[in-house]
Image 1: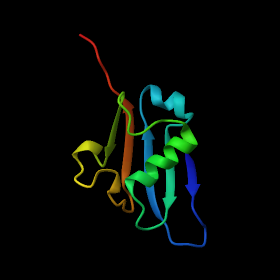
Image 2: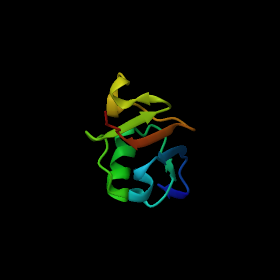
Image 3: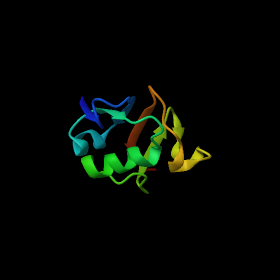
Image 4: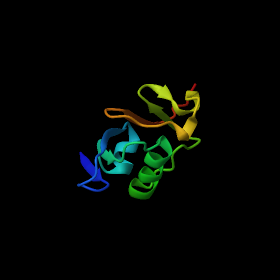
Length: 97
């Protein structure tokens, strides 16, 4: 587990990011705990994931959820405000027949 902090003196919210299946290996960890400023958005978390883990989110071959809801289902999309204890889960789409 890795922790990302914005500024230790400023108030923060804690948001978990879980990497599932093959994304664990790509991210190099199972989970990150982000300490973000209050009012941070899903877009800010996506930017952090891209910059830190090199995973393009949202992406065409990736399922991204926030508290069990797909990002595409969220009315505000990437502008959705994050809250204390929110969980982002990322996993590759499965295909087959």
